Amino acid sequence: MAEILEERPSDGVALLRINRPDVLNALSTSVRATLAEIVNRLDADPGVRAIVITGDEKAFAAGADLGELKTRTVHDTNFRSSRVAWEAMESCRAPVIAAVNGFALGGGCELALHCDIIIAGEGSKFGLPEVKVGIMPGAGGTQRFLRAAGKFKAMRYLLTGDFIPGPEAAAMGLASECVADAEVLPHALKLAAKIAALPPLSVDAIKEVVSLGADASLETALVLERKAFQLLFATEDRDEGMAAFLEKRKPAFNGR
Image (cartoon, rainbow, N blue to C red; front, side):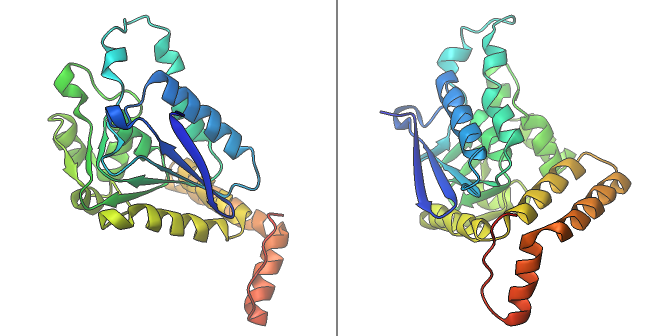
C-alpha cells in the first residue's frame, strides 16, 4: 500500500495522508522522498492552491524511523537525501496546512513546523524528544520552535524532550488553532478551501513576504511588503476583486 495517499477533496485543494499506521506514521527515508516528489509536483500544478498534510487519529507522524537512524554514521549519504522533503516544503508556493491528531514528535513535529498553518487536536501531542536518544532535532526543529514560541519555551521543551499537549502548543504559538479531535481534518480542509478560493497571486505574495520577512530586519521586510503590494495592482485579480466588491457580487479569480 502507498506510504502517502493523495486525494483531491475540493477544487484547488490537495490532501496528503501519511500512511504507515503500523509505526505511527514514522518518516522513513522513502516516505520523505515520496513526500518531496508529491509536494514538488503539486507545487508545479497551478490548479493546486492549498495542500493539507495529515496522518491518522493516532499519529500525524511519530518522528523519524529510529531503525534507520540507529545504523547511520557521521558520513552517511542519507543525511543529504533525507533533506529532500524539507527542501520541498520550504520552497512550496502553495500554502500548506498540517492537520495534527495524535503524536507529532521529532521529525513529525518538524514536518508540521514546515507548514504554514497547524491545526492541532485537543488530544494531540507535540514534541522534539531527540535528546532522549542521544541526538538533537536536525530538520529545523530548534530554529523553527525558537521562532514560533521564543527562546525560553523552546529551551524548556528541547532540553527535556517533554511532550506538549495540543492546547498548550496553540497557546504558546506552536500551532495556529486547537480544535476537537474529530474536527481537525474537516477544519483544515475548510480553511484550505477558503484559501483556494482567494486570488492566488495575493496568497503567493503574502506567503513569500511573511516567509522572507521573518528573518529580515523590519526595514527590509517592510520594503518587501511594499513592493509586493504595489505589484499586485498590475493583476487581473485585483481588478476583479475590487469590481466584485463594488458591484456586490461573488468574484471569479483566475490567477492572472
